[in-house]
Length: 486
Image (tube, rainbow, N blue to C red; front, side, top):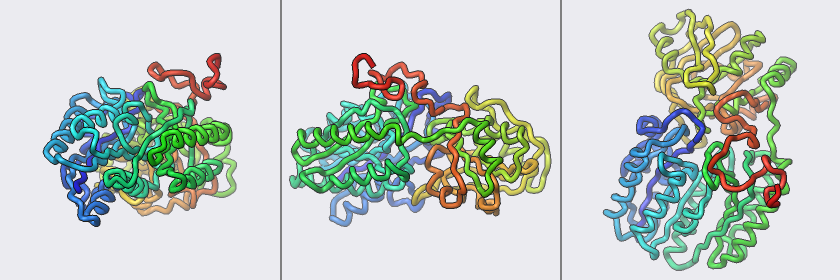
C-alpha cells in the first residue's frame, strides 16, 4: 500500500493589508519532499503520517510542506505554483492508495476563495474515485461543499489553543486507512450553525462540549466528530461555524448527529462568549490588581490572525498612564530591531516603535530606551514544537520592558520573554499580542487574564465585521439567523 502526504496552508485575513508571498512561506515553513524527516520540522501531521505508514510497511511519497504565518490574501502565482508542485509530485507517485493533506481551511488566494476545495478537486481529478483522500484542518476553517464533495474524510483540531494536531493526524490516518482497506466506508455530513464567534476550549462550557463530541466517536458507526469554528476575518461565502461528522457508511446517522450537536452549540452561544475589556477598562483593572502578573491579551493585533503585530494602541495607553512593572510583546519591527542590534547591549537612545503597517497599527511611539538584551535567531515554544521569532531584542523604557522581533509571530509562550534572562513572574502586568494561543503557557503564572478589545486588524466585534462575500445571516449580527426575517 502506498500513501501520498503533503502540506499547504495559511490562515488568510482578507481584511489584512499584508500580502502573503513566498518570503512569508520561507520564513515560516517550506520543505520539499523531506520535511517530515528534518530535525527542525514543525508540521506534526506529516511526521505522524510518515511514522504510522512506515510502521505498517507502507510506501510513503512526500511532497511539498509549505505553511505561512497568517496575513492577507496569498499571491496568486505563489498559491498556484505550490499547488501545481504538489499535483505534479502526486502524478509522479501514482498509483497511490491514500492521499493525506494537511491544510489550514481558511486559505484565500487572489482568484481563489476556497484554496482547500480547489486543491481537493484537482487531487481527485488525478487519483480518481478509488483512492481515499483525507484532509486535516485547523479548527478555524471554512468547511465548503467543494471540500466535502472531494474528500473522503475531514478532521479538524478539537482544541483552541491547538494542542492536539498529532492526535488529529492519528485520527485521520486510521479512518483513511480503514477506508482504503475496505474496513470502513467514511461518509461526511455537516451542519451550519450560522454563527461567527470564537470558542475557547480549555474553559467551560466549551471544555465539556469537546468532551461530549469525542464521546460519540467509536460508537454506533461514528468515526469522527469535528467542530469547525470558522475564521471570522476571512470574508468568504462559507465563513460560519459548522459541525462535521464522519460515519461508517451511514450518512443519515452522521447528518442527525451533526444537527444534534449543532443545536447544542447554538444553545451555548451566549455562555461561550469571551468578555472583552476596553483599553480604559483594562488599564483600570491592571492598576487596581493586588497581585500579579495580570496578563492583557491584545487580541486585535494577533499575528496569528493576520494582524501586523506592530500596533501601538495598548502601548500608548500604558505609557500615558505611567504604568510600571510592565512587560509586552511581541512587536514586529525589523527596523527598530536592526537599530538596537547596531547600537548593542547597554546602549540608550530614542527609538521609534511600531505603527508602521497602516491604520490598524496606530501611530509610532517614540521612547527613550535602553537595549537590555539581544538574541539572534530567537524561538519560542508552540505546542510541542517551536516558532521562529527572528532576531529579537529586549528594551526598557521607564518601567516598561518590550520585546521587538524581526519575524512576525504572535506570543505563544513565556519563553518568548524568558530567553532574555527575565522572569515573567516578576512583572505586575504582561501585555501579549495574541488571541488565545498564549493561554496554555501564561494562565498558570497569571493572577488574572484580561482580553482587551483594542483597535486593530482583527477586532472581536463579530457583528460589525464588514463582510461582503459571506452568504446568509449569522449570529450575533442577527439574533435568529434560522428565521428568514432575522
